[in-house]
Length: 411
Image (cartoon, rainbow, N blue to C red):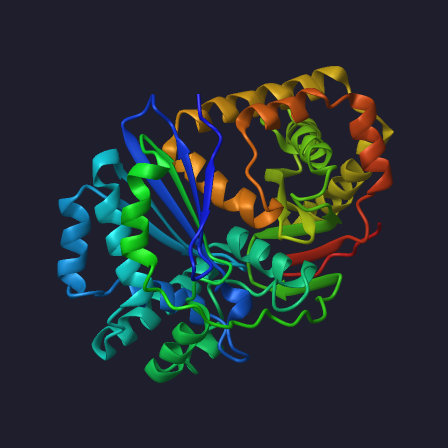
């Protein structure tokens, strides 16, 4: 079992959360830096993504290859990614090597080389990723859906755009690094076979020199259109549907989660059963819960043949609305069982707990325990979930399609 997390705030503003897991041999870290794609400069969407790659190409007193070899030498499984809100640095290792991992991560955020000779390769990698989306319309339609259902700049994709990537230069990206990669509002979650007393000296050695800055929060803009179509010659039509719901910090979040689990929690879920199995309308269908800090969305996908695409969209929206008619006890029981499995697995994973610590602090300003989450899930009833659905109906729906012909939203 995990213990309550210890919280330390360094003088530069970095919040450090440490949760001891004495039953494991590993330790993991998750550093959230508020420098995601929403912070990309105007006309430079993709800056955060390219910077994420560039940061790891040499830091401290090691060049690109030496830095990678040092990660391998200590058995550190390190990864970096970008969300709308954050640059994420995460990884795990044997507990005894966590100090070395923190030192390397400190070099990345404080003393990266950002070498000119590596810049073009980072941009090219981002360009290749975007070009590959043309061969992955299922992923592309969901990115375009998020772009329209959230307000700018929170909906713009971390991957950026090909047009904006051309505007990036080494000088502009170095300036972006100076303005965004700062400890202010950054959060470091640590979990595993480690205590706060043991690891705090290494944390201070790695991050005390990280200078406090004054990064400005993005200005909230307008959201996209409710109905849009991207023309593509294909035998299939890809459908994305979104509607607003509550964010993770809302007291009703777990009711929202349960409703989405009834819709799309496995092969016995409503969307799979009603749309794919019974009607044979599509080859893939699902719904998922997406959350920013202050707002959330339910994101749905369906892929169908062109001749059945309109019917697929109509039935999908119909199923979303039918949820308010009632939920069976068996459906809620199945959702709770899946949640319990996820919680047990999280308790056994230092990486999962480190990530949860940082995310909880960002969304809630505190850390929840798996037991607390389980209690919230257990308290859910079919009546409470249906009450939530009726008070948060699936409207307005944002619909984005990719295929030969546009569809109509009859909702």
